[in-house]
Length: 431
Ligand SMILES: *Cc1c(COP(=O)(O)O)cnc(C)c1O
Image (cartoon, rainbow, N blue to C red; front, side, top):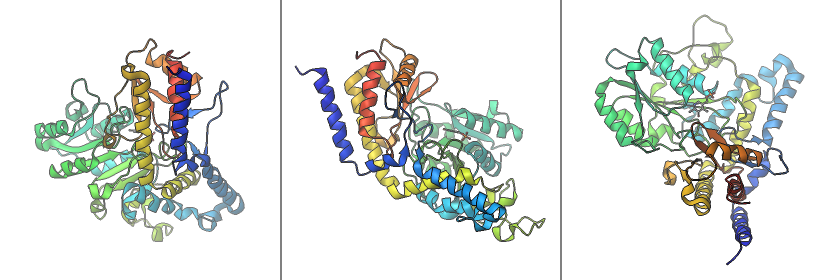
């Protein structure tokens, strides 16, 4: 019998070979990797929470600081990338990444703020049609936003907020169950607010099917893309999604608190929807005439309120340029292989001791796998803490999940191999 050590060396060589064949592997060098700790190099598998810094982000911010210093207020028009029109640079990049038209997407604010701004326009409850459907395990910020909007309209969430939940004992949501909910509540549902990728389980929902379903029932569909953008290819326009919002610091690598974004489908852009107004939603050509009458900016830009935070937007654009150069299609291909590799290595090493609550069909997940420690002498939380000491950066989500997300831009097959080895240490199954 061959020793474990030889076996491990073979597996490390397999991982290296997969990296050599990976034509996206060179992108890793374009990112800042966290520092060594306790004598170990980092294994960073946490792009689902905060993506790594593209080196280009530092140059991009420095350029704007320099222009500020050199030009002062003149920078609004004379900076190398004039600040007055700075956010337009993000537009074609976001449109390509989300499968949208240029007039449907804008970089602005943060996710929860954008969710509120768009619900002002898209949640207009009537007495007989005021319900909202969310998923039971929705990210708390989204739930708070939805409940507070309902109360703002005098609608009681206790009575009118409906939860879509997985079948008993399951972690995944099934669209058939959602259809049954819709039948049950017939014509009283005003809006669905659903995730593209569920943050806890990592399930990727079929947004095209959700789009059809919502339109068939005449219900507004909003999608939270926090865990989907930069992770899976999107076709928001063709899928007929009404509106979508996202943050840019997860898979998009835009930096902590980075400027997020919003999508509004073209069919809503000419309508005079109720919205909250600010001067940045005024037409650019008349904005500085300082007139009392609002002159609506074209497209989704009408939802902008304030002038843009240039230093937070610069890294987002630098990062979107990387996505454009690498190509979301190619990234997705690598991502499917990388995540499948992680899944296979976990099954080989741990069998039933570690269960994966994320769907095993690649069409139903992005890069994240959510692990539950089911049958090891050490608890999940303890394993997570030990992984941290071993300089493995993943995350813990209450009550009992370790989220592991190999991001195809900067993670390698060798990272996955290292992760599995350190998990064995942390679980006490390897000396
Ligand atoms: C990360 C995340 C957020 C974060 O909201 P911010 O407004 O950017 O702080 C909201 N919703 C979901 C589903 C998320 O995953």
